Length: 177
Length: 187
Image (cartoon, rainbow over all chains, first blue to last red):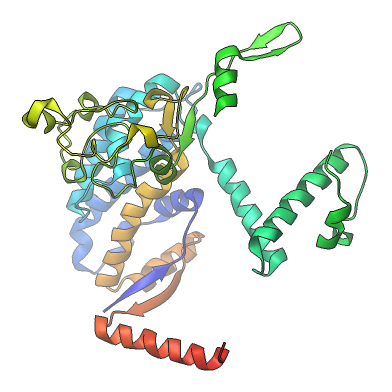
């Protein structure tokens, strides 16, 4: 008896995962064959909810609207209970009771998505850890940010600079405008 | 926050045009709970918008919009009318102190929204967790991994942890610390 560890996927990869899974094939030859329809239904509902949330609602053909959305999420919560998810999580609670109001007020929540900030955070972290080799992290983070700003300003003025030549010790000479 | 409030009230004037702004706050649940001071998603009164408690989350027939959480004064939950003098039934105003709320004017529950990216991730987590458990219980891990590989999905099985008794795992950790101590030498 054990627990398998799986890779962590980003939002797009998760959507691809749920779209590509064939539960009939996966559960074939096991006691779960009878539960295929339940799983397909849960995943189908999740994909529709996800599509609706990630739509800007400009000339779209979404079947759901802010008023029917809540009932739809309630359905997935009930379906989830049939496959073993006992508790309604805070995100599902918000989807049922609060997101419909937000949708009425804001039309679409996609325009407020923080995916761009998350991407910047991820790239920043990767760059920082590659450069610093995990030593003196706050200092290296500052270096990385300042160098980014400095080169950004310089490149805007049309000056070409070779990034590799600049080291952390050149920072003393950098003056930000 | 002062700058946001100022821009919200008077806008920005460039030449003869004044541009007015409408601010909307958007974040994941964790940051939202931290910034308004209602602890975390696993606290009893977890919701920034209403007074649903974690034991009542499964009551899907309830309309929780009738019990909104006010960010500026005491709020009433369904149990409050039974308490003395119509005061909040929980001593600490349902785990919320208005003074601890860092989201001041112009932000209020009406212009704060939940991030769709984190909604996608956290709701998918729920289904994934049960899928991985089912795969473990019915020995479907290899089949699932192969199916994902064939379809081009980036889901890979990393490791297979064996469940051990608490005492044994504690001993393992101790022995690991000893080995690590030996390798790294005295400090």
